[in-house]
Structure formats: structure tokens, C-alpha cells
Length: 383
Image 1 (cartoon, helix red, strand yellow):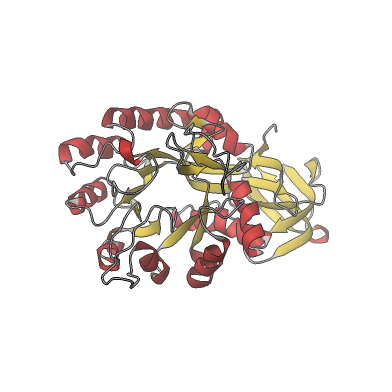
Image 2 (cartoon, rainbow, N blue to C red):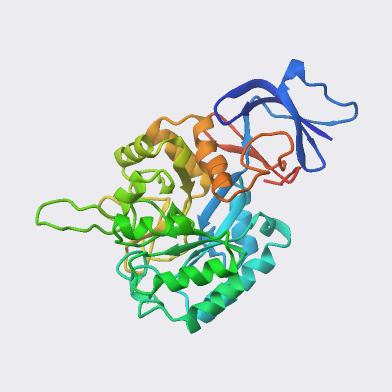
């Protein structure tokens, strides 16, 4: 039995000040105000230092960690994120990989998920194979741009499902319906995400009954349909903003480059707190950081060999800090965006909030969301 004392407990919509959390056998037990919780005799006492305890972060979309792709060394990439408060992660595989590379990456990540820091891996996020080849980083290396072929995609489905929790699609691609049908035949619970797309609202909405409830890095790598000269059309971003069914991922970097701070606030106003999910979209492209212009000296963006933005260098705790900076979000808000909402999306009933009976994945932070300690499955990790 462990007792975390001298701690402020962050709940979904409130905070318990000067609280106690009991942890037994890797599970959260009783918690509440100090004077209301009886600490069992012999319990190990952990002083929270007057900091804040929230649920371990859930990053549903990350390609890498610490300059290491998950498909290269999933253990090291996972350790990078775990030390920064992420206790559940979906490694992401991208459309610049061949069929063989994707199959190898799937097996590497599956194996890593069984031991060590890799245990934070709880599935895959397939940002492949069939997105719109006009959009995204490293577009010239899209290996899946020429057509949708069952003999090419079925081995991926067989290898990844049901371990893969999310499959990205561009709904406008010819033949995408058959691919979706085959994914759902293998895993009826698979989540679909609209990604790298210029689909119309109608093209997107037809897939909602099949599980399209997520928008990949909302407002990034999406097109616009122009019906008339000098008249703004409606496309992916508008469809996502309109639909109450669809969660919107946001990459929130320190300078508001992926998503302008005003746009973040606008999306938040439209979608509401219940449909925002923060992601890291961490990548390990080794392109040059611009020395001049708006991006000069930036530290939390990633660039491909052409010098184009290609994901980020974020971890999810940093994304939370940036969300607080750009929107005035509270700790309760950012834990919602980075833990509770992802848990709802992924139907993870035993994590995502400080709740009796949940897995004891807990991150202790200060009031600025700086990580102090991380508990994974009831044990504090070494920082």
C-alpha cells in the first residue's frame, strides 16, 4: 500500500486541495481531502510536495521519442515519453514506409509492448496507407499514392488488427470503401480518422457510422474545396468543426505554428472541451532547422529534408503547457484534453482520470505542468 500525501488532486472538473491518494496493488484506492482519508498502518508514505496529481497522459499519435522512431527502437522512444508523464501511447506508422517496412514496424512495436517502458504502448495509430498524396510531410516518398489494392493492404490489416486502434483514411480516395470494409471485418471496433484529406463533408460523414470519429492533427495537412472564385469552400476542417461525433486532435506547439492560438481558441469554442485531444505527433526527421524567418531557433518543431514542418519534438506534457499558454486552460482542462478525452475515444474504462479502481497511472506536476514524478501501474519510475 502506498499513500501519496500533501498533494492537490486534479479531477475532470475540479481540484481537491491538500489531498491523499491511496494506491494498492497497482490500482487507485480511496482518495480525498487529507482529514477524510484514513491511511492504513504500514503504508509507504510519498510526500507530493504540495504539487498536483493527475492521470497519466495518453498520447494517441506519436511517431517517435527523443529523435528515435518507434519502429527503430520502441523501448527507447517509449522511455522518452514515460519520463515526461505519458503512461499510454499509440506509436504511429506513416505512409512513407513500404509494405515490408510497415510489417516489420508492426511486429517490432508489438514485441516492445510486452516489456520495460514499452508497456506504455497500447496499440498502433496507422497514419497509413491510404491518405491523399497531396498533403503531409515527406509527400514525395508516399509509397501508397498509386491506387488501393487488396493484395497490398490486406497483409497490413492481418498483421495490425486488432492491435491497431486507429486507421487513418482520406475519404475521397477512389476505392477507400473496400479498404474500410476489410479493416472493419478484421476489427469491428477499429476507429477511423480523417487525415491528409480534401474530402467534402458528405464524403466524411458517410463513414461516421463505420467509426470515423477522429480528425488527425486538425487544421494541418488538409485541403479546401473552392467552388467559386474568391469564395471560401467547405472541406475537412469545417466538417470536423461541425460534427459533434468527431474528436479533433491538436498539435499545440510553443509558438502556435501548427495551429495559430486564435484558431485553437476558435476550435475549442466550437468543439467544446469534450471533443479536443492533444497529441505530440513527435517525429524524428533530421531535416535542417531554419536559421532565418518565423521558424528560426524553434525547438519543438520537426523538419523534413526539404525544410518543411514534419511533426514536432513535443512530448504531451509540453503540449499541455502550450495549451495553457495559448488558451488560459486550467490543469483540469489539459488533463481532460491529454488523458480523459483520449481514454473515452479509445474506450479505456480503467484510466484517464483519478478514480477509485482505475490503474494507478499518475503524474505529479507543479502548477505550470512541469513533471515532478511519474507513477506507472502503481510504481514510481526513476527520473
